[in-house]
Image (cartoon, rainbow, N blue to C red; front, side, top):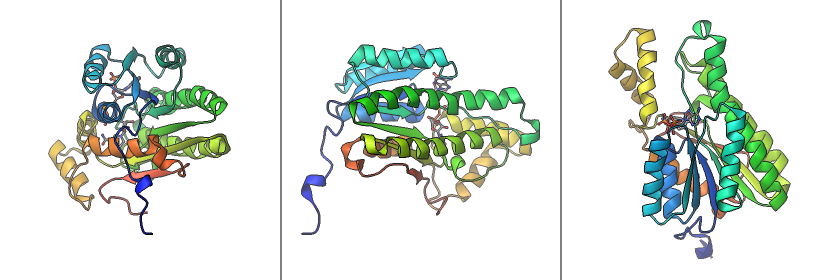
Length: 268
Ligand SMILES: NC(=O)c1ccc[n+]([C@@H]2O[C@H](COP(=O)([O-])OP(=O)(O)OC[C@H]3O[C@@H](n4cnc5c(N)ncnc54)[C@H](OP(=O)(O)O)[C@@H]3O)[C@@H](O)[C@H]2O)c1
């Protein structure tokens, strides 16, 4: 028989699952929240902005999802712990952790201050590291769980004027592999998504990159698009679709992967 109907995706792919999602207040995080809400997940939404989190919570609730919000700065370890505790207090467990929160910084390496470098790593790496520690202890004890890290094509190659950001995303890809190896026999899968250019507020950060190069912002965007065989920016919902797969039972056989989702930009 070719094909297996029982393996086909069905509605409610996250029914009964509790998800802790960071960077949930806008962009890719908001899209993941709404996609997961439509598939039956209960959500604990984390970011710094309480008002924008509340707007996403209301949108998720309109789709029928039980949703809690917790405002936290993930660069602060004690706030990471409080965010994890909030998810446990709201729903009693965490089945899926999505480390999506991230920040960007544009500067040549020689002009990147230790403070700039530290700030990017605190959010993009340490925030994810602390949450993975908490979640993996919890998931491994229960014998099941999923971690989805939102890395970047910047975790796979070099880019001009973004050494802190690229270092952070390479670190996240490395953490994904190591955590996956340690958790593999304990029922927990750890994977990452490496998006290319996605149409969110973060693209606006390329204004600083354009200023360093001394060219118009639009020219930087066009040069970026020229590197994408599909000649388009991705939409946040496309990242959410892959995150859904990695969070659901459909991907149970996959772990330690960092999947490119980039319109064909890096064919490695
Ligand atoms: N857009 C792209 O082209 C692209 C490409 C590849 C990878 N990515 C990655 O995708 C992820 C989401 O990016 P996006 O494009 O959706 O960016 P975005 O629109 O700028 O959203 C970033 C999210 O992270 C949260 N955040 C930032 N700093 C935080 C902190 N210290 N503590 C807690 N939350 C924090 C923000 O909320 P608050 O400001 O309210 O805290 C927001 O919800 C990031 O990890 C990014 O690196 C994006």
